[in-house]
Length: 354
Image 1 (tube, one colour):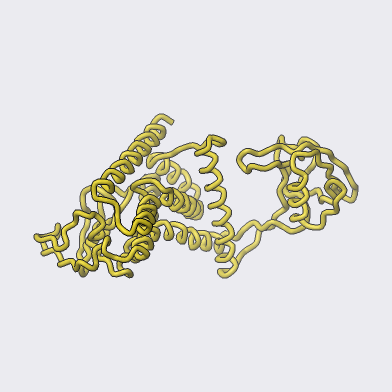
Image 2: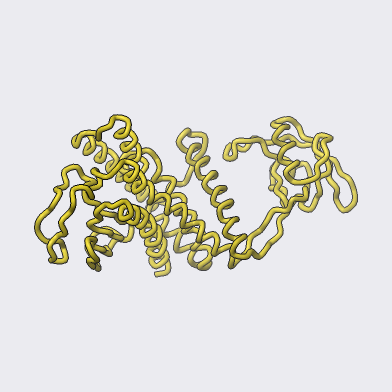
């Protein structure tokens, strides 16, 4: 039950935030939003407010905005009743999606991913306010020597204060990073102060494929600090930048074959959400933030049926000064849908056989 509730919470938050981004920018740019839906499948709840029908559906694995005019074959003034039994509102031609300026359409397309990047800022801020944050110290004191890496193998220990590297004086931790970066894969000679005694260690850096750089396997000493709202808010940007960079590097390595990734589908994500929820609400919020960033990055990939693919089509329209034909658009969307379905089935199969 906890897994089900955690999965509904995570998917519900991510989908609502993403679709709200499309919805609010469509409204702001004068488009006619016929329906704002959370979930897929049978309707559990529906309510019309003004021109828009708001629906909650049974399968919480997605959502959508039905914006009039996104399909070139949409009628300008559809007749008949909607699912509430009320007459459908008359749609002004100027408010159809494809009749709005290209910059407005670009904004609407990108707004979903933008909201996925904004959500973690607030989640990380809340987590940092409640739990505080481990902040690296500027002093060149080793907090950890990673087991079985060069520094650990040479005899470096946590608490050692680095004095010199290759005879270059070290005053702060940024000096350590700069000297080791310049040193590359060459042997490094590190002099440390351990309990008042100087010790010298020689070590051969190891190339880390994931970080794409030579490393000796050390990290700075940290201290736990309680943060006020302002400091937590600012640090949330720094932390999200780090997460985004790491995810993009990982995605690049996966695409180029220089790295590997464990692909998870809806079932795998739901299982992870349940496991994290057992630890507590704060880890669940952190998990939601990481997943939101992941969703934002994936949605911006220039693939058909994803927001990134829609954006590329709008760029082509701006260059050509006219949209692609209806047949071409339909074929592109079908290719995208088939790709997404294939990936979903593959990841779900891996979840079930894991």
